Each structure stands twice: as structure tokens, then as C-alpha cells.
Amino acid sequence: RRVHGETRLCFGVSSSFPLQNQTLLSKMPIITGGAQETKEVHTIERIGAHSHIRGLGLDDSLEARYVSQGMVGQVDARRAAGVIISMIKEGKIAGRAILLAGQPGTGKTAIAMGMAKSLGEDTPFTHISGSEIFSLEMSKTEALTQAFRRSIGVRIREEAEVIEGEVVEIEIDQPGAGSTAGKRGRMVLKTTEMETVYDLGTKMIETIKSEKITAGDVIAIDKAMGKVTRLGRSFARSKDFDAMGPSTRFVQCPEGELHKRKEVVHTVTLHEIDVINSRTQGFLALFAGDTGEIKSEVREQIDGKVAEWKEEGKAEVVPGVLFI
Image (tube, rainbow, N blue to C red; front, side, top):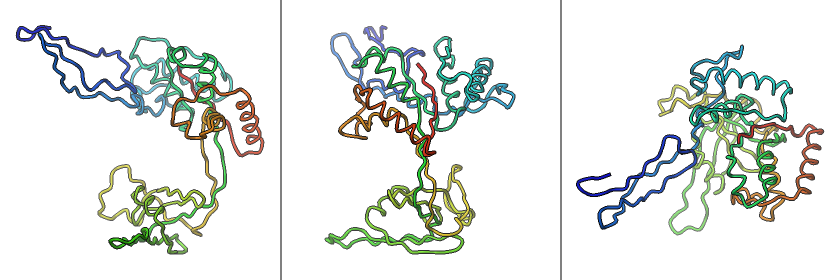
């Protein structure tokens, strides 16, 4: 367009441009009459355009509420998706594909995400575009196989020793100037029946700081891994004049012994197990992104092991959703 006698080339983004998981370049040249100047353009970042969706927004009779669980409109399509979900739960439509047709921006991905959420909170949801299969440096069969195995979860159950209680007090001793000794401290935990003092090492102190644990929190410590999980805020502290947001969760002070054996549940995908067992760098390959082709022998061994866990009651398979 012409501005004050100069010709300028303007860049725009159409409404149908897929902004999800995309970042526009922060610097774009504005070409003027003879010179070229570079101006800063604010980056547009959209992470998880459908992260607000919690389900299909249907009532018990599969009728769609107009606004519910992050979904708005598309009442007929959501009702149809609800019928499909019912058939999946009854095992009548397993392994079949469903075609969602419509113009860009009409909610196809949102409905697929709602279907995944309706099947359960930890149901795997894999979203790929058809062009990805052609652009990857692997065979199309391998790309589709990896996508399918990303969409199948394994819920693994194991017993773990945990320390569960309400934090009464945390004291951290700061080492003096020039001292080479690490940080030391102590933490008092209690249940309705007992109270115990624990000595804290440097690693545990860092974990407590990173999790922002304070007196009045109810926590669980995995003894094997040293992982600290905040379960919530004690009801006894609910009337304290602390700055607490609406997301603060209040829980009862644990009963019985501090040391307990609890069942811990982990949900992973078959593809994650494939990668960990097929690469020399193990689980670090998950973060590299470039997993490469995985041998069929590895997958056969993993399928056999998962079937063995399933028979022993240690694991169960969680069917997921693959959206292309």
C-alpha cells in the first residue's frame, strides 16, 4: 500500500492460518522506497488452542448443552460424537475410523479433543496433520505406526513407600560465608496420631523450595525417588489470612502412621516405552524428538511384556484417540 508517497509491503495473517503451536518471526522487513529498515513485531504464540476443553458438554441423555465444558455450539455434531463415545465405551466400535467433515474453524479438532477428554483424563490424544507423514525422514508405515502407538496408553500400577503428613514447621540452616558444607535443615510432619522430626539434606531442601512447600501444607514424599507432592492445604489453616487463590485445595490432616504403602499409578504410551527400549540414550531420546525408525522385534517384545503385566494385574491398556 502507499503511505505518504512510499510503497510499503505489508504482511498479514489470515484467520484460517494454523496458529496452534506456531510462532511468527519476531523481525519482518518493511521495504520502503530505497532503504530497508527492520522493525520489531510482537511474536504471536498460541500453545494449546484447545487446552480449555474438558469434554463434549453433554447431559446424561446425550443432549448437548449449548455452552458447557469449554464447548460452544455445534450441538448436532457434539450429540453425534456422544453416541460414538457410548459405542466406544461398550466396545462396539473399537479400531474404526470416524470422519469429521467441515470448513476450517468449525470445531473439528475441538470435538476430537472433547471425545478424548470424555473417555478419561489420562486418555492419550495424538494430533498430526496428513502432510507430516510425507515430510518425516522415515517410511509412511513407520510414521503411522508411531502415531498409533502414541495413542495407546499403558496404566502401570505399583506399590511405593510414602511419607504422608501435614507440615508443622520447616527450618533451614544457612551455611556461613566461606563454608563448604551444604545446606541442612529439619521438617516436622504430623498426622492425627503422631508427629515426627525429619532431617533435610541439600537435595530435599531444593525440592521443597521448588515446590513452594510451607507450614500447613499436606504433602506426600516418595521414599524411593525422593519426590515431594503437595496434596493440598490443611483444613486447620483454612481461616489463616494467607494470600490464597481460588485454586487452593483444602484436605484433611492424614490419619494413622506417617509411613504408608500406597498404590502409585503411572500412565505412559506404548511409543514412549518403544523409544526408551530401542535407543542407546534411553529416556533422553524422548526429549530429542528425532526417535528414528524402531525395529519390529523391539515392539514385539514390548507388546509381550505389556500383555504379561496385564495378566498379572500390574497394568491395563488405555485406548486413546488419533486425530489426523
